[in-house]
Image (cartoon, rainbow, N blue to C red; front, side, top):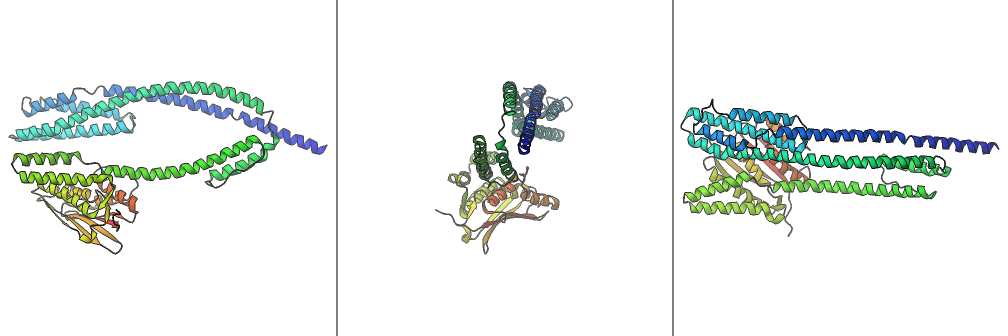
Length: 483
C-alpha cells in the first residue's frame, strides 16, 4: 500500500513538473514575438535609412562631370579668373553630400564606394591646385591641358560612375528590403498562428499522456548532448526504449555526423577559398602599367624607332604569357626570371633616365619551382617606392643563392629606403592574419601565397635603411617541376 502511494506520488510529482515545464514554452514564444517585432523594426529602419541615403545622394548633380570638366577648361583657357571659378564651390558641395552619406550605414560595398568618391574628390582638389599654381606661374598651358585630359576627366568619370553605382545599389537594396519585409511579415503571421495552435494542442495532450518510461532514456540523451556541447563529437546515443525516443536518438546521431562532416567541409573550403583568392589576385594586371606601356610603344612608333617597338611588343608579350602560364600557379625560376626581366626591360624604356637593373641568379636554381608572379611585384615595389622617390635614379638587382635545404632570391634597390617606424609596420603587417590595405598589399599577397603553399617558415624578409636602399629576400624550399 505504502509502495503504491509512493509510486503514485512519484508519478504525480513528475506529471506536475512536466506539465509546468510545458508552460515554459510560452516564454520562448514571448521572446519569439519580441524578436519578430524587433526584426520588423529593423527592416523598417533599414528601409528608411536607404530612402534617406538615396535622397541625399540624389543631391549630387548628374551633370557633375560635364560641369566640372567644363569649369576646369574655362579656368585653363583663362576664360574665368581664379576668383570667378566655381570649382571650389562644386567640390565643397560634393564633399558635403559625401559626408552626409558617410553618416548613414550604407553597407560595406557602398561604404567602399564613398571612400573612393572622397578619394576622387581629393584628387580633383589636388589637380585644381596644380592648375592654379601653373596659371600663377604662367606659360604652362600644355601642362594644364594634359592634367585636364589625363587626370581631371578620368577622375570625374570614375567619380560619376561611383555615385551612380551608389544610388543604384541603394535603390536595389530598398526593393530587396521591401520584398523581404513583406515575405517576413507573412511568414511571421502564419508561423505565429500555426505555433499557437500546435503548442496549445501539444500542451493539452502531452500534459496528461507522458509515459513515465521516457525519463531514463531522456537522461541518457541529455548526457550525450552535454558531451557534444563540450566538443566531444565521438559519442553516439543508444536506446531501445520507446519509438519516439529512438527516433530522437537516431536524429541526434545523424546531427552529430552532419556536424562532423560540416566541420571538415568548412575547414577544407576555407583553405581552398583563401588559396583561390590569392591565386586570383596574382592574376590581376595593373591596367595603368598596360596603358603606359602601350603609350610608350606608340611614342616609339611615332618616333620611327621600329626596332625598339618590336622589342617592347616582344617583352610585353613575354610578360603576359608568363603571367597566364596556361592557368598553372607555379613556374620554374627560369620562367620567373624571364617574366621579371620582361617587366624591367619595359620599364627601363619608360624610365630610361632613372632606372638600371641587373639579374644575377645561378643557373643551378633555374629548374626549381616558385609561385608565379613572385619576383615581379617586388621589382615593381622597388621601382615605384624606392627608385622613383630618389633623385638621380638608381639600380634594381635580382640575386639568387642556393643554400643547404632551401634557396633564396633577393630584390634590392639603392633607392630612398624605408624609415624605421614604417619598416616595422610593414613587417608587422606581413605577419598579420588580417589583409592589409594600401601600398604593401602586393608584398602581403606574395608572402601569404608562399606561406599558404609551403608553410610559415618560408616567405619574405625585408631589410632597409632610410636613404640607403631596400632589400627583400624570398625564402623557398627546393622543389623541381613535375612533368
